[in-house]
Image 1 (cartoon, rainbow, N blue to C red):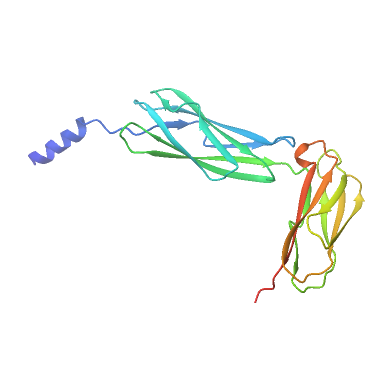
Image 2 (cartoon, rainbow, N blue to C red):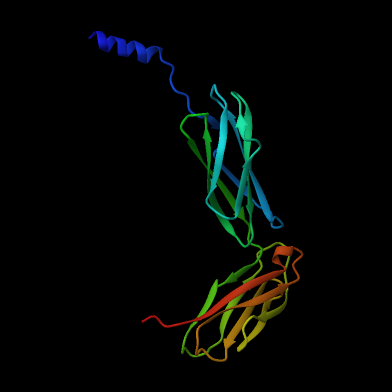
Length: 223
């Protein structure tokens, strides 16, 4: 009984071990990109809510489209800081959800991981369907069609198309000038597998949409 009471007293008077305490106002941020945006910045403010300094050890990213850093490496008790994540849009469209983990630590204590989420809605300026046109080796070399549409507020015209592979005939038909086009591609033969692209040039004032790509393939038949 005496040992039990001693243990209770020790537990009562021994300070509780403190771990890294970065307190985030919001761990999930949602942004809608503008059509002209090439990169978008997400800022996650936080505060060291603990009683000892906290160091940021690392930030793990789930996508190569992201880069991230904090405004400094160490934060004193009660000190504010932030993590900024930069999303490079590239060819992404629609709703993109990208996660990241910030790893922090009190000196000599266990590491703490906080998961953050960046949600980016990227408006469609140009759409091309399907994503990939396919033929099988030995299939009849019939013409197939990409549909190029412009949901953007300003019309965008196709000014030129070219194929990265020889032996393909490519043509463009305007269904509605500046709004919808059919891009037809026809192989002269389908005797061997290959991958290729159609390069589409437009008069878009948005640099990233002045050139687009449509992909096609001739694939071996599955056995």
